[in-house]
Image (tube, rainbow, N blue to C red; front, side, top):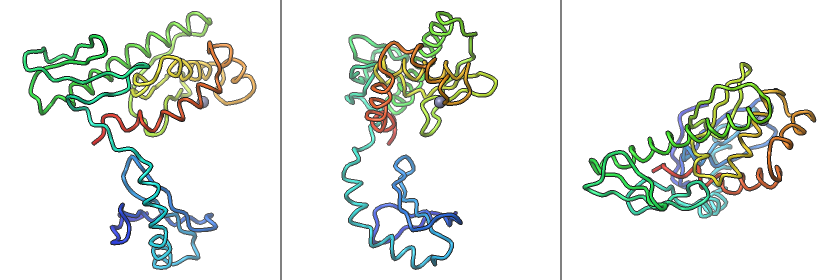
Length: 232
Ligand SMILES: [Zn+2]
């Protein structure tokens, strides 16, 4: 892997990766990082790979056109929140700690730190709710309590470590409750089965009060937008 390369014919820099098992050239949009990942088989030269990438510019432009812009946390913006849409509002006389009233999230304080305060509030809210929702599920199903934390772990919505600690993506607070509940059921099921085998799926279905497949597809559909919130 090398430093991303800016090419005149492409809108995003290109990051080359030589891959011993790659059979052909492959170009992927890495949306969070704002670059193009070019996978190069060992037998293909660097200049031939870049020539090929340049010829994909029409495809790249078409992909970029489909990507919605990032959604920064600024006053007046509307973000998905817990199944609805919440409006962000800076108010000079309001307290620095954001307050949510009727889907309007308001705070005061220095305007240049508005986005940071909103982001911190969303993370705290995510942590509290995900802890509660996880506890509710473990206790009702007789599964032992799990330490729960939140972060922004790249592409994953949740993970369960070998020791049983569950970590969620804070952006789940932006998702509708049934979608969040599906991720909680998934991770809690991992407390019993550290794999995706038949036993795991049976337990996950028992823990989730709804259609697992529908929830998974819904998360996949809305996921890209949730990941754009708070960037830019
Ligand atoms: Zn899993």
